[in-house]
Image (cartoon, rainbow over all chains, first blue to last red; front, side, top):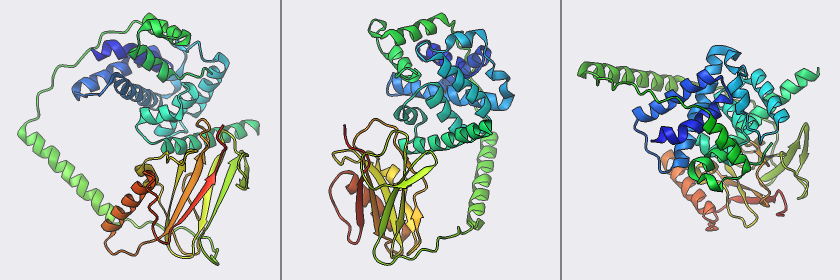
Length: 156
Length: 227
């Protein structure tokens, strides 16, 4: 069953963005939707890309609808930050994420998560979001502009 | 940050045998296994909608579609202010690049670095359409036709225009070339026919058939030297 195979990675990924309890709800909802709509994927990678995208979008929606309380680091999430990622860089990116999440639109927020928090390449972002690399590039520019604006405001 | 993204680690964990995972993937794999995944709670199957409910749903859908279509018909897009340049001669294409707050014209290859943005300004002596794309060092076009078509720029005679989006160098150096194609806007009454022509033409460009449309200007700019 796909849930047994993809559920763990999906939960581990979502815990990076929201609290454990919210992450569990999101993963449940995503797999329920997959079951209800009887989705068929050509391979596991494509299936996981879809799950990955849905989990990210739902986490972003959840934060937008319920405020930053969903962003607070709980024990499970702080443990789940990948060790291979430089902790200082990751903590900085998460700080930025807290400040910026409400000023990004949905796609920009997703690109920020994929690129700045999870280290995806532009090609991977394009694959997950099912958009062209050119569109990813355009979104990345907007994200960079907003980050630059924030940096300037902080310097003033 | 590690070179490997979270997504690629997860894909490897899902698709490969644990014995072939690298150290970072194995760490992530251990972490995933330590999370207790709650069982999936699937909802009971909903009863299908009654005939009348379905009809009502279709009626609402039809009404909304009609409303949107009417709005689209009466919507007037405000005209943008236009630059006042006048073309004296044929089509001119200028490429510029931006690093931080500095914008410079592209005059030589080799100055561009990762993260630099590249933009294009075009001025033509007649109404034209323009496309841009990126090719690798062997002139293999890296975009697909839809990508190229989505970047179509309509240019008024003598008015300087630029593509909406600039190109940012973020991928590994492939000795990229920026290719800009500017063609006189075909005066064909049937707009559907024009779209088909555009797509055919772009397909040929992407497939490297070297089919040249008359009166079109083709410009290639080497952005980076291949390593």
